[in-house]
Length: 112
Image (cartoon, rainbow, N blue to C red):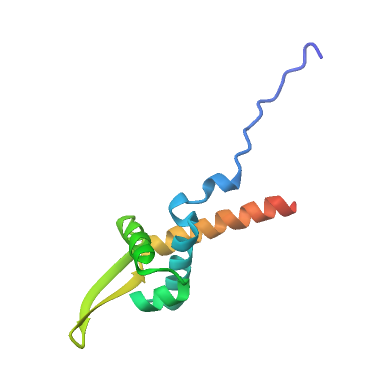
């Protein structure tokens, strides 16, 4: 229709794009979820909770540690090396943002 001004259309950005790709990988999400609910966990406890291998767990905890989401605490117990992991404040914040984005996405898909 001539003479009618068009209103600018704001792009609708999918909440899926707000999902942190570092956390979105399922093992890293499982690690952060476990640490978020249990606090500190040893390497073997995390391994048992996630059902993964030593190598996979090492790779993914290292990525989370590099991002500042997880802190590795290394020590000795009974003459054996022991690594305990804890979620950091930035890790808790990132996990909360991830879960909020996931909640928005689910709401959008359900029509809420």
